[in-house]
Amino acid sequence: MTHRGALAVVGLGMASPAGFTARDHALFVRAGLPPPPPSFFVLGDDEERIRCRGAPWLGTGLGPGARMTALVTTALEGALAPLGGARHGLPFELALCLPAPGPGASEDDLRDVEYAAATLLGPRKKRRFQGAAGAFEALTQPLDTDAWLCLAAVDSYISLEAIAHRLAHPASPWVGRGPPPSEGAAALVLGPAHRARQLGLSILGTVRGAATARGTATDENDEPVDGSAMGEAFGRLGLARVDLTFGQELVDALRRREWHLMAARHASVFYDGCADVCFEAEVGLMGAAAGAMSLAYGLATLVHDTCPRLPGAPPGRGGRSFVAWAIGREGVRGLASAAVP
Image (cartoon, rainbow, N blue to C red):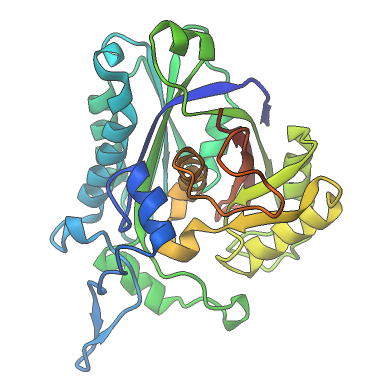
C-alpha cells in the first residue's frame, strides 16, 4: 500500500525512559542523558539485574495496560498541546498502533489503552493497527477531506509476564545482542497544510508519503532475508535522494540485513554520507511503537537541530529530509518520507 499525499505535522509527542516530550528526546538522547535507569527486575537468589529499560517515572507498580495508557496519553497530550483551544471541535481520526495480544499485554489491556486514547482525543473515527510497521500502514489509508489524523503508537515490554517470556524464549545467538527491552509511545497530529495555516498553527514538518509491503521472512520463521519486500515499499516512495534515515538497523540481524540489501539495490538514491540513526539502540526496544517512534524522533531532531551532521551538508536544519522505517514481527515492512520546512 502506498500514500503519496503530503500531510503537515502540527503536533508531536513522545514518552519513554528518555523523557516526557519530543523535545526531551531530541536533546537528551543526543547528550546521552538521562543515564539508563536501573532495571526493575532481578533474577533468582543472586539478584542479578535483568537487562531492560523501563520508564522510571512510571515506577514498578503499574500493570502493562496501565503503563501503556500512561505512555500513550502523555504522548497524545504533547502532540495536541500546540493546537491549544483549536483542538476542540476538530474532526479527528485516531490511528492507534498496538502490539498483538500476548505475554504481558492481554486483549483486555489493549482495549483499555484504546479506550483511554479515544476518550482523550474524542475522535470521529478510530482504527487499530498492529505491529512496528502499523504507523506506516495507517499513513497509507485515505483520510476524509476535512479530517485531521492523530497517529499514535505504544508498546511496553516492562512487565513480569513479558520479561519472563523473553527469558524463557531467548533469541538465537546468531541474531546478535540487540537493544534491551523497553517501552515508549509516540503521537503525531497531521492534516492539510493550508488548513493548518488557516488556524494559525506552526508546521513542524511534512510527511510526504508512506508505503508498506509484506515480506516472507519474519521473527517467527527461518525464511531467508532478501530485501525484496523492503525494496518494493521503498520503490513506491519515488525518492530521488536519501541523506538521512531513522530505523531499526541496530535492532537485530533480520532488520539490518533487510535494510542493507534494499539499500544496495537502490544505491544510486542513497547519498554517500547518508547517516543511519537507530533510536532503539539508544533507548531500548519499542515493539509496536518502533515505526512511529522513529518517525517522531526524526522530526524532533530536525526541528531542534540535534540530528547527525552530514558530510558537506550546510549548517542548520533548512530543507532537511529523511526516511523512517520499521519491520513488524509479522513481516510487514513500512517506510515514510518526511521533511522539515
